[in-house]
Length: 162
Image 1 (cartoon, one colour):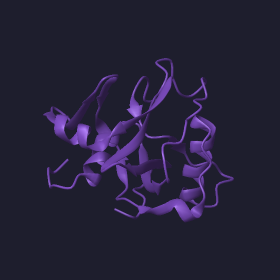
Image 2 (cartoon, helix red, strand yellow):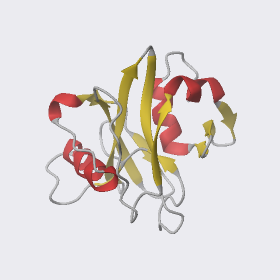
Image 3 (cartoon, helix red, strand yellow):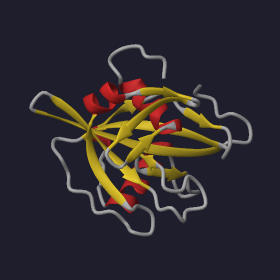
Image 4 (cartoon, one colour):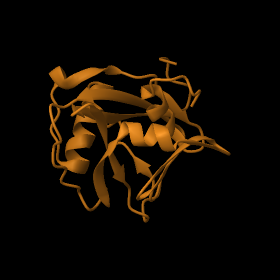
């Protein structure tokens, strides 16, 4: 769905991945519990498009820098996955797949992120469960569900219809 649904707010996330010793890793953040939207959720760095953002890729770059202190350049962008709609909060999220050469140390902005951690994708796929709202991915720090789970499902090598 590449045409923005009517009334939805455009947003972008950066799905950072790197490969090390035969394993793929991705960066997940935990949002603070006091946030108005998506409190305490495990997610990818990202957020709502600002008027100053020329593109949704710029939104992902800006938000990743703001939230975890990681600068992204265009040459790292591997492309955009299928956008995801979050109907209850009215967001239309563009997930940008970003290749990084190695584990980059995140520096979480405490106003927006409780913690940021690298998680092995294989561990997520192996632990996946089907819940009331679709696929869920248990981790040591909580469960990834909703839009973030649907994005992870797009990375999964098998067709588990997330």
